[in-house]
Length: 356
Image (cartoon, rainbow, N blue to C red; front, side, top):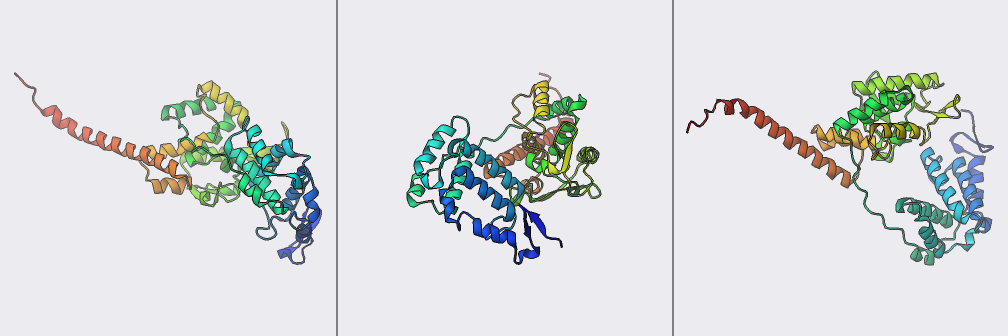
């Protein structure tokens, strides 16, 4: 096996006498005392470089792409406030001031993630103190509301609008797939050609794109999903995706250039989705991630048992599980009532009318 070239250094096979791992150990924030004097911007950039090079040398060798992308977002936000501040000058007051200022533009969940990254950076540099631990309090997070799902009529109308214009056909194929598989936006964008098995009608959600380890799963495909995925595979091949490891939704470099080795960005369908949302009159839809909730709701409305739903959709919160249980139970009650009414109709018709 040829050595892996990362960051100008060579990772050897099995990391035996590995110069890249040795570099990461010698220059990590925890082993290099000079990092305490670095500004946040320089320390974050060094931390990110080492993470990309060898991961956490004490645990995983390599880091998931999704994790690195999230860390880059957190770093960019924190740099706007702390770019030139040395690490050894941080205190709990900086965390509180950041919460107050950032709350004007961001929610509690995102702010907590950003400051959790800062806390981890300071801890690795040996600068996270007991007063800081007691002084920093995470922002309280309100339990998320259950998102609204499209009704069957709204779903049909949404798909009709998607199919009405050629420039929206990618969103049309994407939506049919999502609505028939329960995949969210990250899982959809992370699909590779090798994850689509049209011989056995299965779709594989791998760890790299799954939200967590419980969302890895095999999803049986409906006829609609098979049709849409075949269209998406044809499009991906036309854009240069020829290997099993290439992405089903290649990354757009420019209007006419694509990189199949990289996944479509999180904003790849934003323009199309906003246009379809406006044209369909479904302005309450927040994004393509709402398609997952609609898909799971269709399963619950069909009376699908919750364990079966979870095997298809993967892990869900207790709040969401309770919600879908109510939907499923309501569908079962409606079906029972309809069955009794249908069974009684012939008998009721034979009851003679009151002649008095």
